[in-house]
Every structure is written in C-alpha cells, then in structure tokens.
Amino acid sequence: MKKVSIIIVTYNSDTDIYDCVTSIMEYADIPLEEIELVIVDNNSVGCDAMFDRLKTLWGEAIVLIKNSINGGYGQGNNLGIKYCSAPLVLIMNPDVRLLCPIFRKAINFFAKDKDMCVLGMKQWLTPEIPSTNSFTCTYMMNGYLSTLLSALCTRLDIYIAKYMHFSGSCFFIDKAMFEAIGLFDESVFLYGEEDDVHYRLLHHFKDCKMVYDKSLGYLHLTKERLPDIKYEKTLIDVSIIQNKKKGYSERKTLINRLRCINLQLLRERMRIKFGKTDHTQLNMLKELKQYIKEK
Image 1: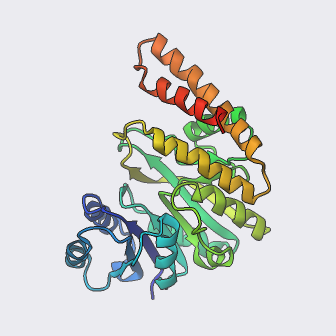
Image 2 (image 1 turned 90 degrees about the horizontal axis):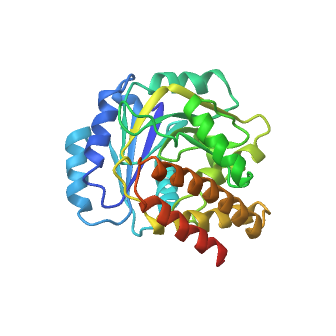
C-alpha cells in the first residue's frame, strides 16, 4: 500500500529532475515501496529519453505520464493526482532537493488528526542560507502589513495559518480534501496557485488545519535567479485574477501591490546607500510601479 504519492511536473527539466529524484531516495525514511512517484511531463522536448533514465534510476514502479499539452502547472499536477493512489500527496517542483527525512513525520501528522489538511516545510536557498519564501501573506492583505509581516514571520519561523499560504514548490496535502475543493484551478497557467488553494481550503473545511514544521527542510534552487520583470508582472496579473474570484476588486489588489513595491523601493534605496547592491532591483521595482499605475 502506498502511503505517500509525490507529484512532480516537468517541462524541459532534465537538468533538474534526476537530482530531485535522487534526493527523495536519499532521504526516504519509509520503504520506497510505500512511496508512489508520479512524474508528469508537460509536452517538453526529449521526454522519452528523460523517462527512460528515470526508470533506470527509480525502477519500473515509477508512474510516468506524457501530457499531450502544456496546460500549465496546475493542469499538470491535477493530471498526476488523478493517477495517484496514496491518501497523502507531496507536491514537488523538479528544482527542489530534500535536505532531511520528511516522510515518516508527515505521515504521522496526518494520521493523528483528521482535520490536518496541509503541511508546510522550511525552504532553504542553500543548506546554510534560509529562504524568505517558506510562506507568504495572502494577496488580500494590506500591502504594507503583508510585506512587513511576511518578512518578519519567515525569519522567525512564525506561521499564521489564517493569513499565510505555503510556497507551492514543496508541500504535503490531504488528497481527499484537495479533491473536495476541485484541485488546482486550471484556468491559471502558472503562479499564484498557493493563495487560491489556501483560500478555498479554509472556506470549505471549517476545522481545516495547516501546520508549518521548520524541522522539515528542502532546498529550492532559486538563489542564482536574476531579477525577471516578466515574472513579476505576471505575479501582479495573477493576484488580480485570484482576488477577483473572491470578490476582491482589482483596484484594491493593485493598491496592495503598490504598497508592497513602495516598501521594497525604500529597502533597495537603503541598500544602495550603504553599498550593499547595485541599481538592478531598484530599476525593476520602478518599472513595476509604473506597470501598476498604467492599469
């Protein structure tokens, strides 16, 4: 019987996926026979060769799904979840590496409490440098408050379930509860899924419990990513879409995002003043501010 199903969606991810799978095998503190590994490829180049190598690495028990389209992150994950058989699901990005055993403790969390819905873990940029993205405040929170609260709470490992959603790069979720809310929203191609899932779970299940365990950690390989204005603009657009579904106006969302950017601009100007950075991030934030004002 499978106790955990791991869903990994790939898209031209052959430089990442093998180390990701190896880290699962290295830190599996339950028998591999109890882990169902499901990999969905979103119609990328070289899929057959990648699948053959994955079979060699994991064995024939691995579930490999060729998506006929690239329907986005949510659609790919939904496809994988429909195939999986375990009651507990781990959503995992291919650029994630486990840093410690996580499965036995996660299984116990969910087994002991029927209202347990989501388990989040501490995200690291390197084994020595913690990320500030283990969890983030919801898009509907006041922009000044969400920026300050997210920064403070992630550094102190204080998670407030009502107002904060976990990073979508690696988290455990109860399969039945996830299915009850309709899984990921496939109308959104990429980004912002966490906030939407968080909102729907809290409003569907009265006693839904979301727990953060800082002793369970994973590495997310984002430290070397350069500032990306297209990505940041997409996050703004997605926050508008997600909030509209909740009856929250576009104007309020844009005001919140603008407040976030104003605080970030202040921080970057201080960092430049003390010689800790160049103008790259500052210039991008200025462009984002203009993008919001033009909407």
